[in-house]
Length: 146
Image 1 (cartoon, rainbow, N blue to C red):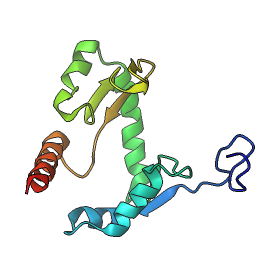
Image 2 (tube, helix red, strand yellow; image 1 turned 180 degrees about the horizontal axis):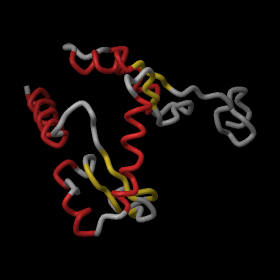
Image 3 (cartoon, helix red, strand yellow; image 1 turned 120 degrees about the horizontal axis):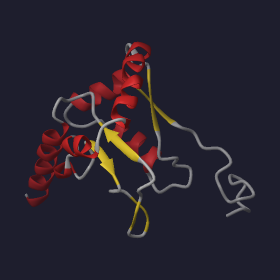
């Protein structure tokens, strides 16, 4: 691995590019049928098993991002100040913790749960992400049975 000219002395890729997707392209790919093959390729490039995959995608040219960021960041303090009962109210187990509050649900090594951080997951493209995810999962399952 370290002998590969694309890798550094530690065996890591010496150059890896962050995958960037223009906001308008992302939105149009979400609403188009059939799904964009190019978008699938970009996601695979970002999160695939290739050694140059960083596991990150940057969305560029997001409209009104500076003002949205200014509104969102102060909410982190409010979230951090919620009681365990209040955090429980915004936990969505039926989404497999991909929506709402998640703490101690992700695994880092084997079956060891990660309690060192908490995450709040949201999706700006839909008001009810859990319902949307369950519908998509159902659609995928139905199409696999045919």
